[in-house]
Length: 533
Image (tube, rainbow, N blue to C red):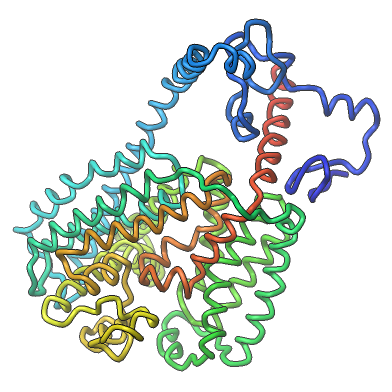
């Protein structure tokens, strides 16, 4: 019977057989192709073998090999590069066009969603619909929308995932600012947010080169790590349940959340487990096809809800399962866009059905409020709130970071979200790095510089995760876009476990995933040959 696990031959995630006959062993060692066609490019690794079907067998006569490249130098190297460009150009152009069209479709559906939110007066006193400003809002979006093409030409990375969600947040703000009822310098805010978006997206999307691994976790230890995470998570959840355990519906969640009182260290541990470690374990289990253990990881994430009473804890398991299904069907960049596009599209469909009395009012509006309003409008609205507040109050100068508060005089003795809750009737209003590390800490003029620094930190995550399978990065970081849209980057790095996830990405043994990709490619090739025969 097939089994998954660590094997000396197959590596960390490889699949092997308990026993094999000599004939089977010989068939297993046979190459998928008798030889590479003339002009084929030798594979550099197993990941290239999984995407290039002409490089898995021995070289045919007249094939350009590594030896000939070394012998003839730049001429042969240029021939290889030209051949690779000729191979990739046609399909690459079509993929980029499809990505751009999909991204533009998402921009359109988000604008329609924001229009519905605006006309229904969802944020009285902050945003007010004025038909005379509708044209300006549309023009703002049209002028900024070509930036989305960057996502069609850049490679997938952790920054790609985060950057796309932040791009939509900025786009939403460019829409909402035209209907703002709050008093601050809207023109300066408009210029600042556009410059901040560019300074953030450029390093986030395009700094992806790998960094040298000084420390690599042994493959066997990495194989055991997700199981250890499950055990540790279960212990932390059990301890947390001793302090607070209430199973309430969404309507009563905010009422009882104020009563949650966990020790500081335990609170940090719960958030790190919820947002970083359990998603990482889930990604490991899905990649190695240990689906029962992946299910246990999702159940543990769900058990965090009665302790912390947050929507993130409640919907995180469903979200990760949704991401895993999308990743199974499409590549990581398309999955990133679809992960935002599909939920918002469903919300818009339900909104229309509710308005035409074809769908029950309560579940339809609950979904629209939870998904469309929470994912699209709220992060953008936070920029509006912070711009208004800090136009008339002292800046924080990063004193929301406890370590900075020890050495810098701070004008605030309570968390910024508490200040916002007291000043605006919108509840506890956490916000993204654009609002906290940008607007609140340094003001509108220097906000683009702060965004550049934050973009470089996200780019560090790109470099530390370089070489890992895109689907693995997407699943293990699946919750972080939602985290980063709603808390400062400093909080996400420390309290929510983003920094720890960066470290685990860095030490992860790439060879384990390379061998998995080669094994998967060989199986796919054999199936294709069998179907052709």
